[in-house]
Amino acid sequence: MAQPKLDRHFSIDAIRGVAVLGIFMMNIQAFAMVFAAYQFPQVHMDFTGANRDVWFYSHVFFNMKFITIFSALFGAGILLMLGEDKQANIGVHYRRMFWLLIIGLVHAWVFWAGDILVPYAVMGMLVVLARRMNPVGLTIMGVIFIALTGGLMALAFALFPMMPPDALESMRPGPERVAELVATYQAGFADRLGENATLTFSAEIAQLTFFAGRLAGVMFVGMALFKWGFFTLRWSFIQYLIAAVVSLGIGLPICWYGATHLLETDFALDQFWVGETLNYVGSLFVAFGYAAVVMLLCKLGAMLRFVLHPFAAVGRMAFTNYLTHTLVATFIFVGPPGLGMIGEVERVGQFQIVAAVWVFQLIFSTLWLSVFRFGPMEWVWRSLTYWKLQPLRKSAGGAPPPIPA
Image 1 (spheres, rainbow, N blue to C red):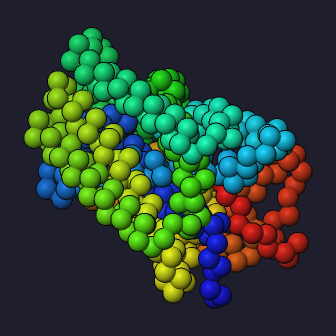
Image 2: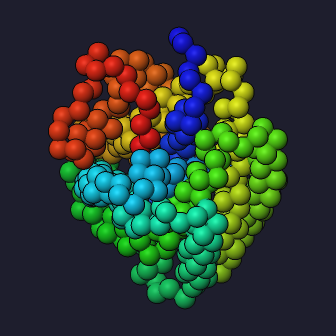
Image 3: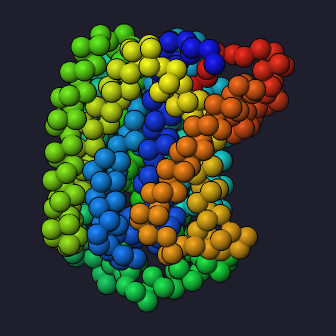
């Protein structure tokens, strides 16, 4: 296998691959268990011993970290595609976001309420307007959006104890409701469409109200980092090293303490906002630290062939791989035509599934891109955007440079 070329596309693809794989570690919890167990893990299945440990370490090292990296890359990708040229064909961008929105709506309402494509498409239509701002202005605006959203989320969490009983039951269901939900999803794919639609409606309102501001803010910061050369390897090895050590040194202790606080208070409603707010803040530092580590590896050219090339392949097929997570998890955990194993795979087993999917996607993405120019869904999205079938096989027109998703 030829040594991958070290350029800005490779570094962006590599970190995107790391991000999309990391996202699945958290998302699987909302497939394998009732949705409420994502925030209140003790409501469903065993929460002791190794299962408790899996929750703890996934919360500290994964929760909100990789989605943050992915959001920053989404902002950087807008700049990479359009640049700062005022005359750039922004219509292409809006067509891309329109089709992303349509695919996201189908994904959410038919398959999984935890979809993130819809808020990405909506925010992508807005943040593109700021692409010509200078990095400092983008960073300030991003921090403002992130801070306002964080304050709104903390306030909402702090008001949990005052919620009416019906609202609390839907958010933190008891054993009878959990059993009812499990039975609904085990019954079959079609049988749970109504429950999924109800959950999707609530989830999309919550995302656009309490989370979209953070997405937009991180996209602004991603644009700034792209302009500063962070994602394109223009920083020195020492700068990346300092960024990684300082960011992880700040962020990981904050997230660790937040997760510990949640466990020690048994996720008490009057204390829940403390743990979640700490993770909200700490995850920003951890995400930046992770990104700096990947950039460090990209600086070490000799390691690329053995470490980062498969991750870059996963990153070039990020759209396909993200949706594949849904298809795999739906087949395993939703009833006929799937296996209907929701409520039967503990957290340790969930991690094993995630690890297996990681290995498969690292191998499959590399093999696929040795033959084809784009991933399957990347090809569909690109063909819809340009309203013309794009050449798929490399032999149809040669291999293009990697295209950021």
